[in-house]
Image (spheres, helix red, strand yellow):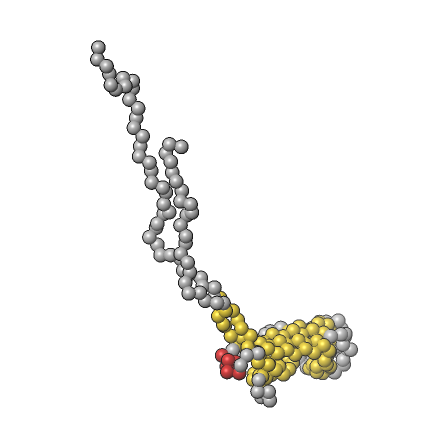
Length: 203
């Protein structure tokens, strides 16, 4: 009888070689742009403000139609459009001056109870004081905003011109775009996975 040196049972399938660890997909695209911590904002080079808590302004009512009958009562006052301005002489070397014209709309009630709308203008001088060196203010852009409302109940008037108490607020700025933030030399590359994943087919 011959001795069998090999196992006579069914042969086991040989295991497949271990797979390599997974790698990050590489699409071949360029890396994303580096954000170096800089951002763009509006810088205020000069600013100024005019505030009248209660000031009387002369208002002409000659634009009312002929059928309007006195006495006239002012019901509401609003600034209807954006103000316009023109540069005015300024004695302060570190400042600017503007003559601001604010369009204003009035709602008027006559003696018969009819309500009319009258448009007019008021003017104020606005001075801006420089917050930066004077040589930087030439590149700034002026921005002016205004708000107007009644400062009390005005007395009825019988003529075509009356004094109306108004609360007026006008603010102006000289702004310019500027870059803020501290630039960095370069951005670090993304780090590899740590620890590296290990794939064991036998576990």
